[in-house]
Length: 154
Image (tube, rainbow, N blue to C red; front, side):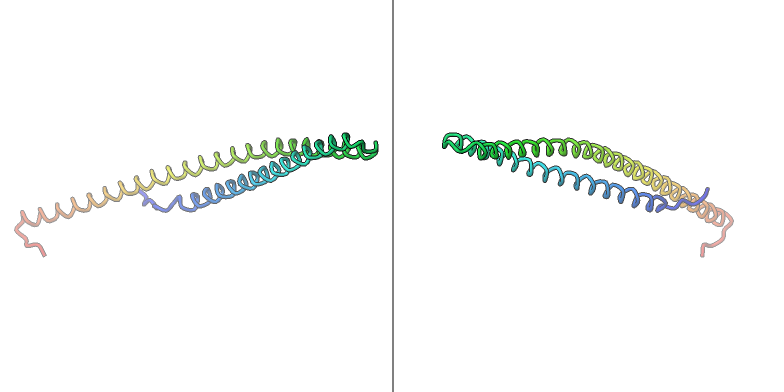
């Protein structure tokens, strides 16, 4: 039987681990972007609520029409920004799901290579034990034949 190289899968395993690391890093980057957009959305929403309160106070103070109009224009602008952030979040969550799926796939591929490597190493160890046993049996046979022939062992 051909000799088995116990490190046969090492390079492939390193490649699979590196792919997994890169995909995990990519997923982490998207999650960081999601948190950033969520913070932005929260800040815009808080500003929007603050502007609504200021506008309602301004109405009570009987401000001029153009000033009230500016308050409401700014509030609508903030509302559009919230909608944009929501759309960005939906897009990022889709990307996150794709990258999470790719990471899971990479993890499965790495585990497959690890199992192959373990199986291959076990087969190599079994083959090595068989060869050693065969050699020991051969040596024992030679010694037994010498002993029956009356020869002295060296």
